[in-house]
Amino acid sequence: MTASPNIINKTEKILNKKSHDLKGALDEICKLLKAEISYFDWVGFYFANHIKKELILKSYAGIKTDHVIIPFGKGVCGQVAVLNKNFIVPNVDLQDNYIPCNINVKSEVVIPIFLNGNNIGQIDVDSNSIDPFTKKDIGLLEAICEQVSIKINNL
Figure (cartoon, rainbow, N blue to C red):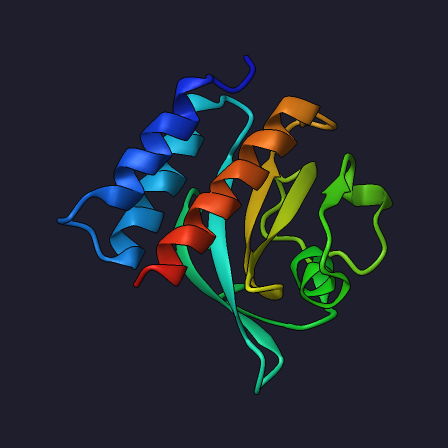
């Protein structure tokens, strides 16, 4: 199953709900993505603390993770915090500097969130399938990151 074109519209509506604070909106987006895309088995948003050089998990849907704080440079998420670009891992068993979230994860994609040119966080998606992510998925996640950036900028 590939990403529904309606997901972008749904995430925009979630972010624009007056009843949601940022965390509530991000929680709902994580749940939406996990429910709508069968191979999105864990979806989370991490945000950067540039002073401590670490990422802090703000919202997620999926199996509970012990990785609520990730140092910059460590694992896929930590590398995205330093490299400032998308990181797609088709098979985590072949990836150096990988932090396993749970034994079922086979692949991962992390897309940074930029605000005024600064990497402020990221969306992280884990899949229990090897190499399921499509260009359409990457485009969807990039669009969601842009929506989140606009929301944060307007707070």
